[in-house]
Image (cartoon, rainbow, N blue to C red; front, side):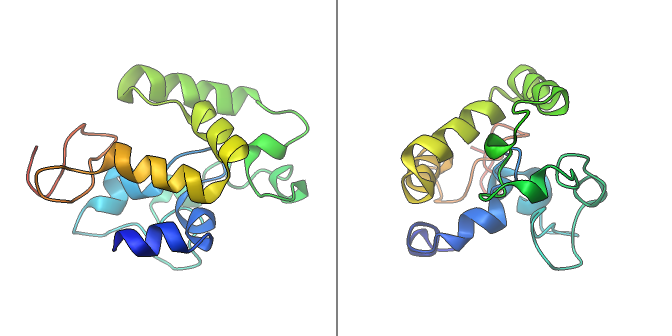
Length: 140
């Protein structure tokens, strides 16, 4: 996808930023070539099993929010989200709670702009994978 598509289309956030704050476009399942996941919010059939069965994505309280992000939930942050955030901070050096706070505070367009810069591979222009810590296209 081109940078213009990311920054000019706010709907991109709804598609590729999960309710929990995970940036699907940095996910190994989204970046891989074989059996590529379309993102947890995708209406398509190519979703990872963990996206289909995700207790956060399928939470009844999420449907009560206007933004469809966990930050609008009346019990934010819940235990499930805290546990997931702890795992991502520990294993992948990224915080889903901080991602959600950024979407909420600066708005979707500015958030995407910042994230594109953060995860952009300066060697080949690809995307750095949050789960691997390097670009899957050029291994940098």
